[in-house]
Amino acid sequence: MSAPSAIAPAAAQRPVYARMALLGLGLIGSSMAWAARRGGLVGEIAGHARSAATRERARELGFCDRVCDSPAEAVAGADLVVLCVPVGAIEAVMAEIAPHLAPGATLSDVGSVKAELIAAVRPHLPEGVHFVPGHPLAGTEHSGPDAGFAELFEKRFCILTPGDEVPEDAIARLAALWEGMGSHVERMTPEHHDLVLAVTSHVPHAIAYTMVGVADDLARVSDSEVIRYSAAGFRDFTRIAASDPTMWRDVFLNNREAVLDILGRFSEELMMVRRAIRTGDGDWLHAYFTRTRAIRRGILEAGQDTDAPDFGRLGRPGPKR
Ligand SMILES: NC(=O)C1=CN([C@@H]2O[C@H](COP(=O)(O)OP(=O)(O)OC[C@H]3O[C@@H](n4cnc5c(N)ncnc54)[C@H](O)[C@@H]3O)[C@@H](O)[C@H]2O)C=CC1
Ligand SMILES: O=C(O)C(=O)Cc1ccc(O)cc1
Image (cartoon, rainbow, N blue to C red; front, side, top):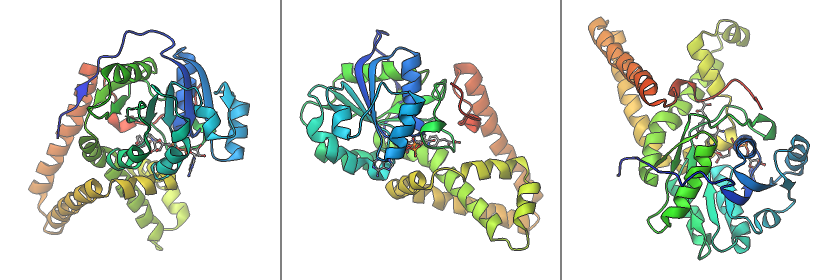
């Protein structure tokens, strides 16, 4: 597994792309459109969403120059195509657009999982189209076209996981777009990405979903008490557990190996904490919590040094345009 490396973006020439096509106009697609428009990063934005209601809402909100009724129409003539749909929908969308992609175009995505997504795209990839998979580490628990806002990617990492065959200028150009939207761009292998994200995002989401499920199962604690007495920690869990069910189902089914590995380690640690509580081993608990506190401080110090994001606050309170 290779360590992440920073990407030097191409000289900030604007617009970076003449025509960007967005397939999927939810939180991430609409935020990309707002951010790219604000920065003058693309000449024209064409968008497509599967449902007529989403297309209609996107037209009302006005973040695309054109909202197309078919994916083929949206990608025609685009020099950048970004797949902004749930990971489980990527292959079907890719199969549909493949014959319509322009030679020399860059194809990217924003999926939270990389290795299996890449394996689903590759068989459909036409000769001469440069595939640069991407993942902005920025989001909220909200979804749909109304949820997007231009500042979503500011001071957040965006990880690119291109294969060795992709020309460096195609990678640098996509990096320039993300930098223009305020992100700090890094490059990793897909497998490394999936392991890092299993630890930092996927398993924490699984734990939040489970903890809220536990509270829900406790008949002794009524719904109103759960809401009324929610302390900050549980409140954070409920925010995360309100995330889109389709998206998260797809994340877990497509990053199975890394998630199961980290969940196994989590269960082992939890058993150790449980044992220390049962046996009254205060010294062990104190030492353990001292170690975890140091990790939090390390993240915050890294944030101060490098202007990296505070990973405790990946989301933002609400749309701000
Ligand atoms: N929500 C978040 O916080 C983040 C999400 N991501 C990734 O971004 C991608 C999109 O997520 P969001 O924008 O949050 O989702 P969303 O639910 O807000 O939007 C998804 C869009 O895809 C369309 N879509 C859904 N199923 C489809 C299908 N079967 N065929 C064609 N189109 C379909 C929907 O109509 C909608 O326009 C996902 O792959 C997710 O893993 C990445 C970073 C953060
Ligand atoms: O809202 C939060 O706390 C998040 O963690 C957002 C998020 C969700 C999925 C991703 O792949 C990246 C970021």
